[in-house]
Amino acid sequence: MRHHLSAALIALSVLPTMAPTQAFAWGGDGHRTVAAIAYQLLTPTAKAQVNGLLGDDGGQAFINAATWADDIRKPQPDQPYPGSGPWHYVSIPFNDAVYVKGRDCKADNCVVEKITAFNAQLSDSQLLEGVRRDALKFVIHFVGDIHQPLHACENGDRGANEVQVTLNGRNTNLHSVWDSGIIKGSWGNIAAHQALLTQRAEAEHAKWENGTPADWATESHTIARQVVYPSLGNVPAPGPVTPPVVLPADYAAKEAPVVDEQIVKAGVRLASLLNGDFK
Image: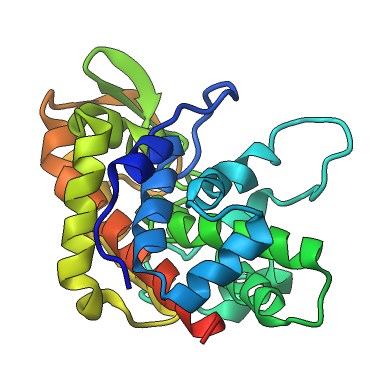
């Protein structure tokens, strides 16, 4: 198993996307970092399988696939997966402690059950290659999504999309800050930071290679309750928050360790999932 993020692979993972900027979990840099970490932790067998599905042997296609599920959500002719928006999150009520499928994921239409469903498709060698290729792309992305705390918690505010905040003079919302604002405000040199996170994943992967998508959602929900909402100073009452809460100038730096750890976990767990698929 190769455990060193090559300079070439780092360069591939920081290539900008050509799509217009839009707020999605972890943004492009975060999702590509999850994929880059995972790719380095794949077994040779798993790496050969994903390379075969994606038509690439150097990791570029795997990393690029990390944002595909967000790209296809955007309005476009012949939308390949209409109605896929709810697949990116799960609405566990703020005051509950764990994911409950019957309450939180009606008709299996949430990120927890979609990881399980698409991973089953990916593992089924009898399915058409195109079906398995799309399943792989969804799994790469959704494992990243489920580790964003506000993609697993609902407080009557659409996952904090309606919690208005001001950060460094810019009006935004708490969800967007945790999607990409903290990364943009704290990582500095993206390639260098990705290399550091990959080193951490190499050192800590045994600690994080555990759990199920339901466990990961519960873990993210706990972080939202215990870290993200309290970071506002006071946990708001359920519902939209206006006028904006002014966040301290060093907010991104203070919260970056939480984001970093979640991205490392996501990369490690994605690799573990795929290694299990392709033993």
